[in-house]
Amino acid sequence: AKERGKARYEVFVQEMHATVEQRWQIETALRQSLEAQQLAIAYQPVTQLSSGDMIGFEALCRWHHPQLGPVSPEIFIPIAEETGLIVALERWLLHQACAQMQHWQQQFPALPLAFMSVNISPVHVMHPTFVADIHQVLQATHLAPAALKLEVTESLMMHNPGVARERLQQVRAFGVQLSLDDFGTGYSSLSYLHQFPFNTLKIDQSFVHQLRATPHDTGIVRAIIAMAHSLNIQTIAEGIETADEAALLAQLGSHYGQGYYFARPGSADDMTRRLTAAAQR
Ligand code: C2E
Ligand code: CA
Ligand code: CA
Ligand code: CA
Image 1: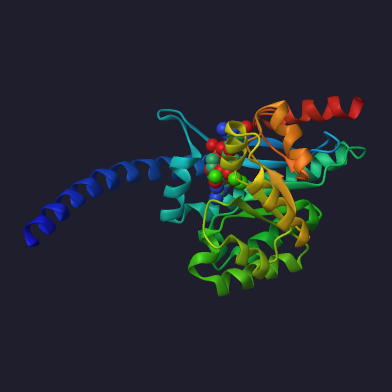
Image 2 (image 1 turned 45 degrees about the vertical axis):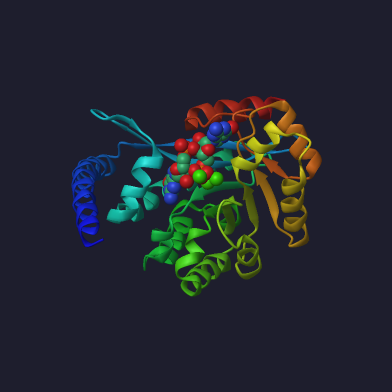
């Protein structure tokens, strides 16, 4: 058993070495890109299912490195979290996204543009500057606090629920909205909804994909939506790819939907074109 343990340890060290090297490369490149303002934001519309109106956006970080090419956020966000770069990255992204939303609300006063959603890592929430960062971005961009929605995942509440609750309550007190992202993929989701001040719950794509496979088996999604309603929490169904899915989610009572069926994530200019078209209708 001792020998096996040792062998496993050596394999682990080798793997870790390779990973550390790659990670270090990516970390260095990411730091440079952040400083050189080479990161970008893709915006994806959120649609009110009852009316078809574009009601908000989710801001998604994009990184196209000159040598590495486009790097998925599934790769660089975890590295940014491990190295602490995520705080500077999200501070930058919050400023861009909030300024953009404030601009769109001014430019399109007749459209029902309610919120800009920004993903916030648990590492950032736990960072000492988190509450000040949120306060500062609202001051600097003059965005109405209620028009900023912060998306957090269940993993935030798992490690230090006391501090998490305190921080979330502090930003809620500014008037900022909170969304529980990827709902249903983690654990004890129900208690989080009771204990934390969420306004919105995002039904994870996996449930929408499940509806795709078995459209008659609507039980879980129906239950999530009913539970959210009873707690006065609105729902956004993610990953909607077809008209049938949009109609089914609307029928099940989800307020909002998001997915390729409505729009793929795109540049600010793409969204301005969509908003211009919507304003002319
Ligand atoms: P997420 O927050 O769950 O974001 C939704 C993801 O689903 C996005 O992937 C989006 O492009 C994709 N998506 C949207 N509609 C559809 C659809 O109809 N079908 C399918 N198959 N996918 C769809 P993306 O942009 O690659 O982002 C992946 C993840 O990276 C995000 O998942 C989020 O967890 C993370 N992320 C992105 N930007 C940030 C950020 O600024 N901060 C943090 N902490 N995380 C971020
Ligand atoms: Ca999200
Ligand atoms: Ca999600
Ligand atoms: Ca996700």
